[in-house]
Amino acid sequence: METQLCGLISSFKEENGFGTLELEDGREVLFDVTACVEEPLEGQSVCVVLSAGRGGTMRAVLVEAAGQPASTRPATTLAEAIRRLQAEGIALELDAWEQRKLASELGLPGTSPAELVDVLAAYYHDSFVGDRRRGADLFVDHHGEQETCAFEAALANLLGASAVTFAGGETNVRSVDDVVDAFNEELRSIGDARRIVPLATEGEHRAYFCMALSRVMRLSALGVLRVRWDRPHLTPSEPPPRNA
Picture 1: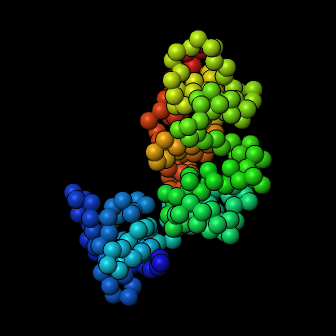
Picture 2 (picture 1 turned 90 degrees about the vertical axis):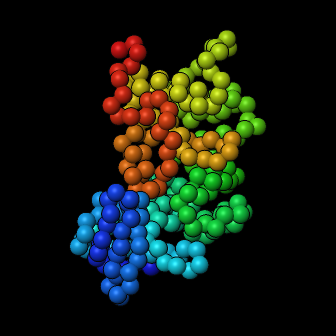
Picture 3 (picture 1 turned 180 degrees about the vertical axis):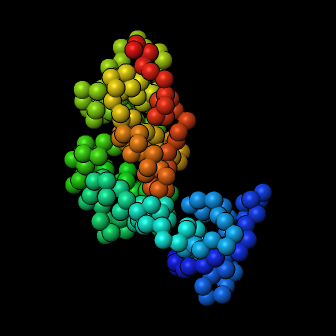
């Protein structure tokens, strides 16, 4: 259960990243700098989202300057993360009922933005909306038991003219991440602003969206997409193509 209140930052220790808030109802609440949208300042008026932690103690999960537009606030719930995606035209049929159904089938609470990829993967594999929406939203994923060549074929089908075809004797393609790196090199070399972006997942599951880097960086900053930025070709200032 989350509650939003207003308050003031009464203290903040930059060296350890912790501070104290005085809420409008007189309570004092500790906060962590990781909950802040921007660097907190003592005496600053803020809006605070509280959530019950262990033992029922309330903690601040979001601290932002008072008056910040809702569209710029990081998503703090699964439903909010999905709404932000839908504002971008993604996962449009994933309504509240479907969200609850999929979360239940996956054994998830259905509350945290960290659950988004698992819910999306189930949504895109649904027999009713799957193929059509996967193609429209440019989403692809891979499970450990799936052959790498099958993943390559699915990605090639998704990208069409921007796809790469690997020669049978190539030995530098050893994993799905290698396949994605090769496709991203091709997108970069033809001047395409899109990248196949790896999302944070658990275990052997891999999931990717293909979209413009500026778009994925915005969605990442809003707490919607958790991105693995450790692969090549995922920064706007990367060097020119090899054959330029």
